[in-house]
Length: 327
Image (cartoon, rainbow, N blue to C red; front, top):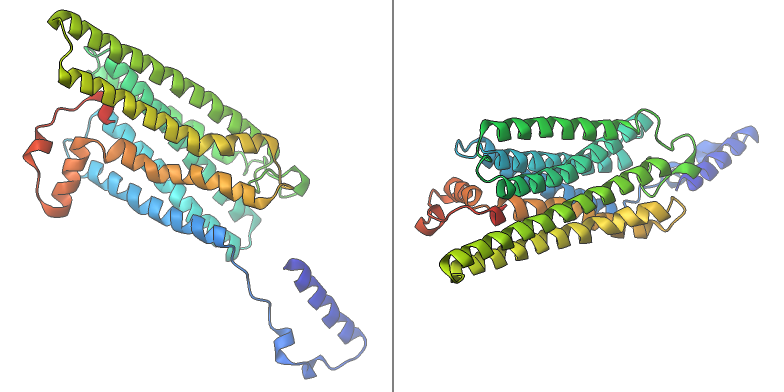
């Protein structure tokens, strides 16, 4: 498109030099060419809008429900806030691409997206650590020490995320040298590779923690079976449900993020752009899935949502005990 505009400008300048009357040219030749909107960008913008609305509901429920103040709800709220920022970043990126033509605003948009998605992944890691501690240190979990640890962890996570988001603004970008661009302009290849490797390391840590959670859950089930000489149906189904939940969480996380991380390591700006959209869309949609996994499956958040929507609270839901598999 830019080439066409340049060619049109050149022809007009040549006409002026030759002394031709350009005012006699048809009006349609002087009109700017229409901007062609990429359907993929529209899809990402719509996805960002849905993401923002969904996570805003989670934040509102946690903020306006006094009973949702435990460490795990603070972590869920932080995750929802990160995904909310990611949705707003996608909307801003669409505006920057088609409305605002500014290199600095482009860097700010990229920095916001990096900060938001980094915080989202780190919050998932923090939730995993919280679930592990709730099982490993069950007797000391509900103490002031756990609350302090949670808030310190949140502060460190957001500092790290914001530091990563500032890298493009501080010079880790490819605006001056397009050959160094990664699949996500204006992030350069070194920055993209560092983020991809960091993500793979975080995923490996999450996988290890969930394996330990499964071992602890099975050990608890065996201890109960030994004490009672048999495993009751409720404990057996609870253990099976917990393993199924962890498998769903890990499988969804890996399916959504690993393709983009691996593709970022091997591709650059010369690669077909369709591959970037195909690998990036699942990672973005993971922020839509997060509330379904970590928030709306929790009985207390679901109860608050039912009260907010219709003012009703089923007895079976209100009396259901909370288990680690709920988060």
